Length: 135
Image (cartoon, rainbow, N blue to C red; front, side, top):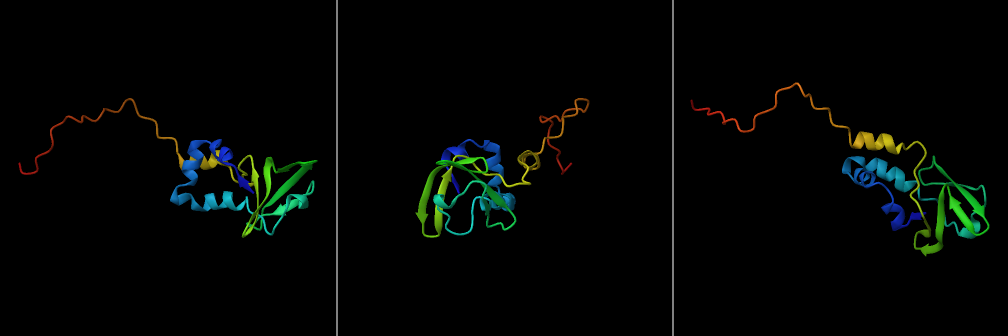
């Protein structure tokens, strides 16, 4: 299941920046792998209430089908059955977030709140003359 460009664009900029940092490779993989299922599942195979196992092996996506409208978790399929050499792609209108991935917590760890400035501490004087080590 591939989110559209608009789906990615609707994510907070700081989330994308944090996920793309080298030190967050594992979290990015977790999110990406949650979009990939085993096998070639065509839209006609997607039944209401069906669970689809992701390549993560421990995660499942849930199908909701109401006539021709199909959602995967809360993401609506906007284009179905795009055949690829390694499977079938269904584009969806939002990015899926795996269970247990707390976006707020992740952002807090990625962008920690700076320590408050102590107003009683004397400011550093940047215009002070440099120390001459030869004297």
